[in-house]
Image (cartoon, rainbow, N blue to C red):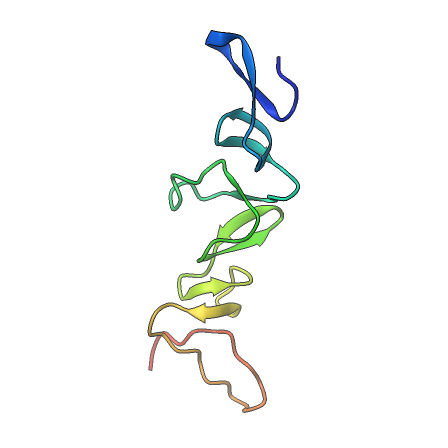
Amino acid sequence: QCPDGSYLIAEQNLCQHCDEMCATCKESGTCLTCAEDYPLSIVDSQRYPDLSNTCHSAALGGTFAENGSLHDCHEDCATCTTGSKHECVKCQTEIPFKQPLESNIETHQCQIQC
């Protein structure tokens, strides 16, 4: 059994340090829990197969952080603050933001139709 922050290399009966992004891990680059400076884990292993079980200090493009995990933005959003189609920071390429009904209201929803 190895202490937190390390994993066992069974064939060598040796404990090896986890990557700095992991608080606990099962092998190098495969976090079980994230370190304090890297609070975000990948939840969509279909979309990010090479990044599942890794931890990050900031959200990736097309994702937003919620409850310590990364989630996909709405399909109309390139970047977002939540999964709602009303919370886009940037729309997908060549999709403009919808024009608000009142000129003093800022909109964060992407226009998908003319």
